Amino acid sequence: MNNLRSIKQALLFTIPLMLVSSLVNAELNRLDDKSLSGVTGQALFNLTNIAANQNGNPNTDIGFYRLGMEAQVELNANIKRLQLGCGGTKGVGCDIDIENISLAGVLPVNGSYPGSDAVITNPFIEFAIKSPNSASTREIVGFRLGALGILGKLGLGSNTDLTTLADDTAGINSLSGDLNLTLTNTVLKNVVIANGLISTEAHINDYNKQLILNRATSATLDNVVAKTGPLSVLGILDLPLGLTLSNATLKDYPLSGFHEILLAQDAAGTIPTSDASLSLQKEAIRWQKISTGTFDNTVAAQPGWWLSLPKVLLTDIETQQRIDVGLGEALGGLVGRELIINPIDSGQIGIKNCYGNLKFC
Image 1 (cartoon, one colour):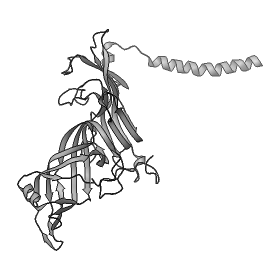
Image 2: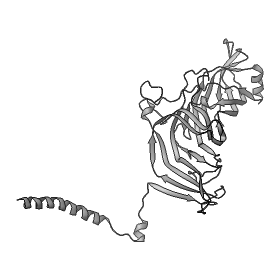
Image 3: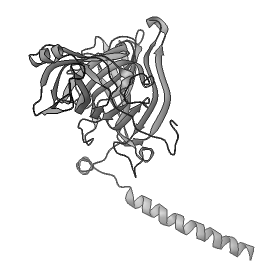
Image 4: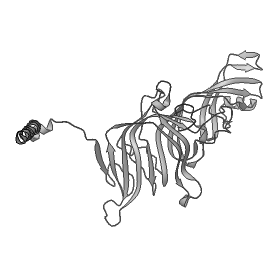
């Protein structure tokens, strides 16, 4: 009886196994070259090598080895503080020092950013090798983490009082890197001319500037064009005319005043910013643009930690802080003389990427 039961169990196990084996064998067919040429597929990982002096590589005797992932990664993250490259041969300070970082999607989900995700397309890690063809002298002189594209929103620091910069102490404390910055839909809501004689608001023309920063705490935005709305004289008389100030400069603006950055190429947030990366190098290195496969118009990453954001946007900014402009300065601005605008609160609050009433998580 026991033998009969054992035979039944063996049959119950063996028959399905034979069926599976036959199915597997049926699927594994040898393909000739002609048949193989008609098969398509894609690997999850890919390896790329750029030899020294290859593909327009402008770096002297440096080759590159990159491991990339053909995938989209969705990420929502908060970092209390990121400090990289502090002290060392550069002395006091950090290459990168940023507080209260939030990474989320472009738009909130059900009114909440914690439910949204930034989309990272084709992330990779890459190494720069000096003297790659010499086994005795070659060395790693740099590495970077990056992606073909990133689409999302970056929150930085905090801003509780929109009328002053005094409380904007967190966020970007210092930064090394290159940022191609675009301002869109920016309005200065509280412009006062001649000590209160005239009040108005000013609209900033869409503006673009590449910032190259090295342990920077501030940046200057020059050649800004501002157009005022109707002029209110003493709050009594409204003049239906505006002024065009063609050479305004926002001088030494603290980077801690930026609280919300759109990681996209368009204001609608539909096109990912390309070729974003964070790198560490022993010497100045020009890294390849993944999106084009070339080194054209690349900025050399300097020794130490370096953040490269080739396209980012500040959008829908409305400043509330009062901006005082002298009458002579306003008249000079009409004929192209430089008008200096002292640092003001950006009016940005930043995204709230925590559930409930938590200020940061």
